[in-house]
Length: 125
Image (cartoon, rainbow, N blue to C red; front, side, top):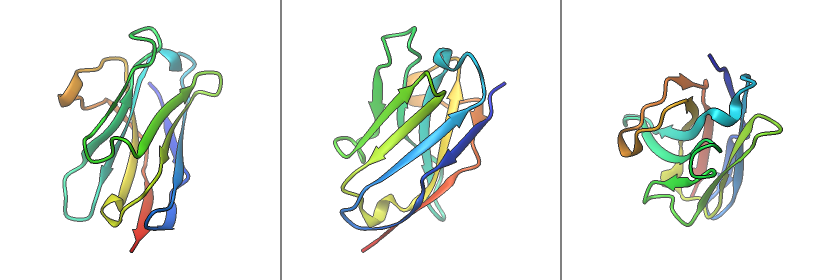
């Protein structure tokens, strides 16, 4: 079991930046694959980014095409925290952003077992 708490959402103008944080409760945090998903109003929840457990490929990162080059995922195992640095934000990035975790990773079909409560990101034009 792992509990996830996101923070860092807010309102920002287009072109601006935000950094989301996700604190995990589990002491074996470094064994978890961590990810970010988002859900815009009226749309399905979608994958944004993931970072593998340190034990597998040394923390490799993955991004959706829509955020590649603008967002950066990272993890600090000493703080049990994963981050999502979001730069060059666009109005279409507006969504509730969810942190997620699992001990397994299945690539493009990944749907983690554990989820945070979400944090709102609003990008104004």
